[in-house]
Image 1 (tube, rainbow, N blue to C red):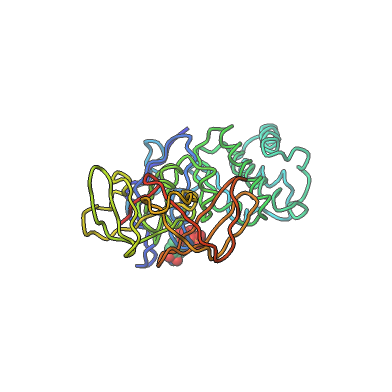
Image 2 (cartoon, protein in one colour; image 1 turned 90 degrees about the vertical axis):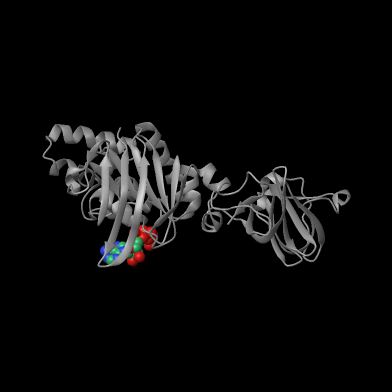
Length: 360
Ligand SMILES: Nc1ncnc2c1ncn2[C@@H]1O[C@H](COP(=O)(O)OP(=O)(O)OP(=O)(O)O)[C@@H](O)[C@H]1O
């Protein structure tokens, strides 16, 4: 198992910015994801690791080994592309065997390795099928087997699930995770789908406009986003703007409207957010952190009277869009105990101080 280091790696395309100074170390055996919207630079970064692009600046290391200018076929990476890039008129066996034949391995060895790879992705017995006789999910597994059969040091996956329907996507994502845990292979995964990133990754690198925004575990990124972009891109969040009114004993009071003030903990602030009296800040509150308050809690700190604009039942939760004065409030109640409120009903909502996160 080896790790991957990107040492201030940049890529420009004829003067246009691709990615800027990506600086990260991916640990041996780690499942690491590049996450961000279209055009943020995740594919460009992956392609530099594969060797399809060379960086304009910076260094790429596999373990201690500098591979910055090494051609792709010397890097021993296995790659799965969004469109799989399989040979449609060839059989499953021939597709999986291709990389081994290029490496001039013996027939018996190829047979054995391909059979093992087919088993690994649950395609035993499919060797003689042609690719165009397979479902999308099966094709995806052929692409995975083809990447793994060469026993790569690093597995690179570029949006491998985006051509699958929702149910198959879910199954295949568990399948990829199972394989990765079984093989313990260092894996770099590219996606724009935050739920995919959250459920599969050891760590995530969130990117925007070619620039890394945050690197952390799913838990850190979800609970301690560094800025508004990360907070709104990863899951849902209420983002409320206000002014710090009081800062005392580790507590922060923020005025959001003439008759609405919320109190949070000063320690729950992103590194970029400097809390000071008079300072404008953004409060990030996850919908599932909003709770319904009892009538007896009216007037207490952090309790707000809201008017329901929209309520929906999803099977798992009841979701609300509501209004508290000028503030839009998204809330989510999970579980059976909640009585669903109708449009225009007045309800009391409350937010625990420790579930408020302060952003710049
Ligand atoms: N070969 C290229 N020539 C010129 N510009 C490029 C090239 N490849 C990427 N870019 C530019 O670099 C930036 C990053 O693109 P990249 O494909 O890495 O983004 P991405 O996050 O993978 O997006 P997507 O999910 O749409 O593939 C974009 O502005 C893109 O237009």
